[in-house]
Image 1 (cartoon, rainbow, N blue to C red):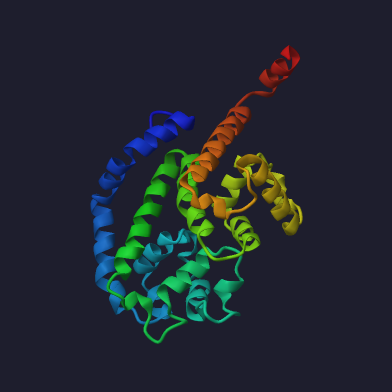
Image 2: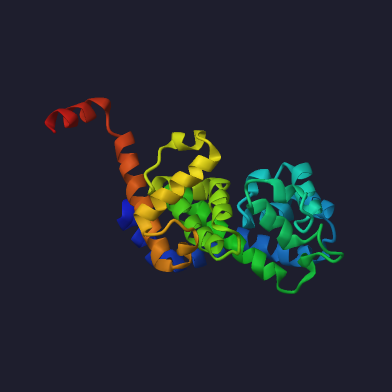
Length: 257
């Protein structure tokens, strides 16, 4: 990515198909995908999945949870509890990616896990490729990584059947989505320290001012997602510029005003 800011984002979006194709063609990714396709249909339990570190890494990466690859006891519990039972661990966690992971595999919900379905590898690997690409982008520009994540995750949340309040809580419980929304709406990092219900109220008020309505459901509209991402990129770029400006330069700028 030879450019930064919104211009760099437009360059990334134009060249993304070619870049994704090149990444997927790498020998490492090809071997990982072949391994997943060969092995996943033979997995019958959560314990078997967490015992295969390679399969587990691919599965967790597909849901943005690769940081938990060594937390096998925790992930086993998430998978074994399932999502149908109200008290299941995944249902009690703020980050709903765990719930998505558990529901996708179905170890705790069905006698035959969903990993046995013929289209299961295609679905998981599609998510894996998307996350892998975002990670590669993030190695160069983490702001763009978060923007790509928001383009994928926020519309899916908007289209869900949850209440609007529950959707806002889901955004607050998901660190990447939270950062994009907070930055786009001009909220400081310290915002997370106030009461959680007050956070939701502030987000709804700011969203209405910025986009015309206080609902998360509005982001089912691609134009609203574009507006959100643009605001995020512009504000994030402005924050980066401020952070790299020396105190003396900022003082001189203030004196000139």
